[in-house]
Image: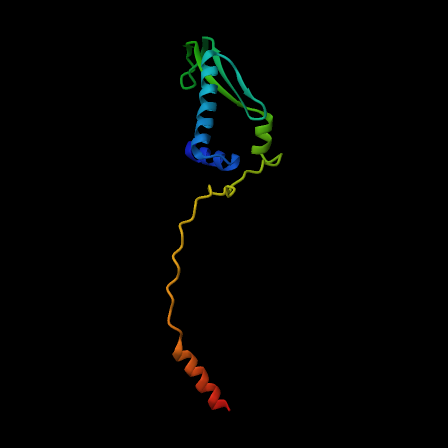
Length: 139
């Protein structure tokens, strides 16, 4: 699922227009990114934990040669799936139901244009004559 599809699904599920859903999804992502960039941990209970982790410098081994090498200190982004998400993803718990059909919203009432009176047609004489002739033949 891409971001555009996520926005469409959120709009349908929450019964709002796509523009509002896009603002909500974009806003949520922006808030998470801004707080993680500051070094705060963002924990969305039952879903995931987003954090910025500082790894210290260390000594490691090159697996090809076995030589000891020094790894510099670095900062990494870490996203941890929480138990609620894992349970649903692995099928332990039932997934929440998502609305896939938008509710029909009645359109604002507009004044209907005045209808023109239908043109009067000449009476169907031929049909009447045929019916009369058939009735006469039967007698």
